Length: 419
Image (cartoon, rainbow, N blue to C red; front, top):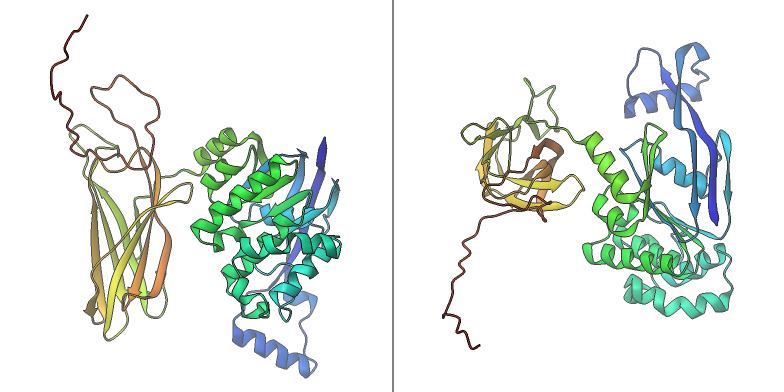
């Protein structure tokens, strides 16, 4: 039985731009406000209008008990879709039919009143979901235990951290028996234990007949939870079907190799007033006869940045991520005092360390070992291909790393034939 039916929905926005001007600065905003006080207003001739389709002609249906992942780049239309399904915004065209009570967790603090305590917000959210007071009371202790906010239950939630907000919001949504749960990327705010617990709870809810819609950039979480997946790109539904198949298709489209990024001057380089990136480059040391990176290939990662501070203790922190969003490792350099000027760092990844797959390197410049000055989240992206010698099995080698550790096997005594 279909509990969600989406037919030809589109969402259209008009974006206004000032003629001949880029992004408004704070000064522009203040100037505009002051002009408004004295009756000087922009006319229609001062603005240009851009049409933007956040969603276009989207069709799909969701069966009861399905766990549906929604994947795609930022700006693909995922969050707009969830807001339409949650009845926060209306579609420009098309229709949506939903059977059942919906609980949505779309951003930190959704459905919370900041002045109310955690205890009061549990009852408020339950009431918004149509629950009776005795039903809420029955689930109350389990909600509090799951969220881990016992000590702060009678504290106004405006004093909660973002992680506490998410834990309590998810616990309420998951325990107050909605027929349909809609969860956006907000779970990424929680720690690893909470994410694991939340995925398990959503899986349990689905086993009891509840339906889950789950947006995440963490494709591993999508594969672990969801039996079906929708892939969106530029507001259009590109593919839908079994999760592993759709995720593989999505990865094949977004996978790309980018081994060098460089900027000539600090003015055009990414960064801020303290530090700016000059170059990040991955330099493979190909084995004889090889022309591409494979599991044997050692790699040097070089990073250069301009330091604009007179004196600062700085170090580099390098993160290596899989394309599914998991951090494979993080390694940092020593903290050293530097003056103004160009600084270079280098890290070596040995051969026979990474398994085949697609990886992304991010670099963070850190001051005094604790204060991030700039985080270059998407630096180098590269593919590692498979290579095997003397192995007759050619299935997918499991894991993200593929080291060649010493591994001795020997017979300790001869086998005695007792027949």
